[in-house]
Image (tube, rainbow, N blue to C red; front, side):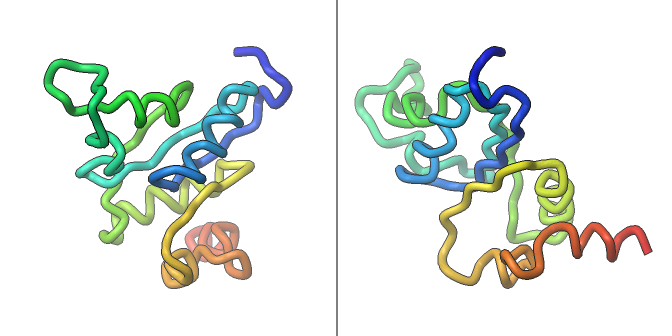
Length: 124
């Protein structure tokens, strides 16, 4: 893939509009973007019509904000999924999230604590 920011890895934990749009623009400029979705999927998948499939499981709205991204499904309410998230964050250059204030901090992933601290704890 070509682009001004090719080689930058972005982890997209966002949903609905502003966060997905931000990550989509990064993807459009060449970043590798991995979108993390809950098992039920981003709620905008069902914001239609119009839908891009006959089963009406993916809206054009969702497709427009999430093009050029890879997807992974994680139930971040569970500790095993958060362990996967810690590893993804440790490999990311950029994290985009729009959770309720304090959610990342409660998971030990706030700006002050970050994934590096968790990674260091795992290695000791």
